[in-house]
Amino acid sequence: MSLVNIRKYKLEVEECWHEGGPRLTAPLRVAVAMAVVKNPYAGRYQPNLLPFMQELRELGADLSARLIGALGGAALVQAYGKGALVGSDGELEHGAVWHEAGGWAMREALGQPKAIVPAAKSIGNVGDRLIIPLGHVQAAYVRSHFGSAEMTLWDGPKRDEIVFGLAMATGGRIHARLGGLAADDVVGNDGLR
Image (cartoon, rainbow, N blue to C red; front, side):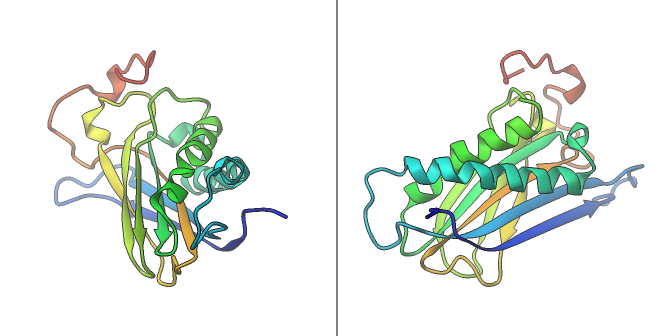
């Protein structure tokens, strides 16, 4: 019997043309894909979480594919992040299984970009929101791509659930003008610069 029991999926795509400055020629698109999963360890301590993490890899691949499709292809994705919101009968470590399962799946779907996948996780209640940090896919120091995406569901997570989410964006902040390493100047050898 699988440890991954999915109640529902949600996919959101935000499209933004400007933030008060000049209108872009193409919009910034930020997408979040999430799944509400029953927490197999809710209300009890489980010393070995690795089987759950391994089974979640398939969910990571599924959510990655949904995001890439919604954004028009892997070549358009410039930023990414991941998040987990654990219902109150779980523990933070139950959300931490997503670091490997979601992060590696997303990086594989995008052709193995170099930068670490930024992450957020928390314990929450139905309707709570989690802000997922975003970073450039090839280099962590691309300041223009430090952004965020909101992950929220009106009916989750219930006490015995976890909401696992992945986020991708087609660019950095609109009208970014604070200097730092430019996306066009990334060497991409080590995920930093």
